[in-house]
Image 1 (spheres, rainbow, N blue to C red):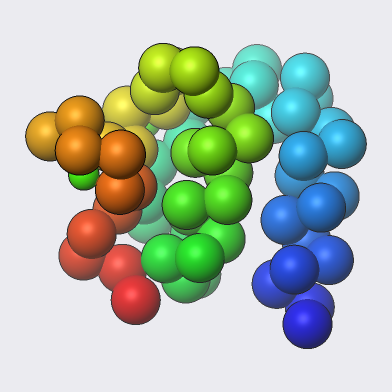
Image 2 (cartoon, protein in one colour; image 1 turned 90 degrees about the vertical axis):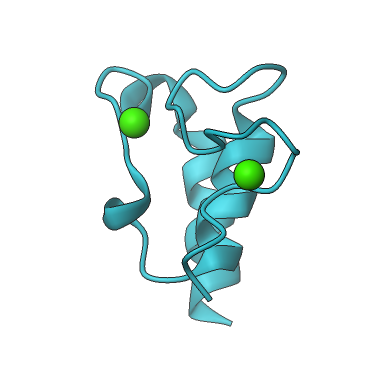
Length: 61
Ligand SMILES: [Ca+2]
Ligand SMILES: [Ca+2]
């Protein structure tokens, strides 16, 4: 529940977050990283999906 609220907050505050590059290590869960990746699309400005298959940070869970 907290992660969902955080993701919603991230979506609202994208401009602030967009000012610095985030990496998979900045997220505590895959869901969080994936929501951020989808909110920042199209494209992958933060390079969270290195193999471009639409799934960010496969090594997180
Ligand atoms: Ca990055
Ligand atoms: Ca991927």
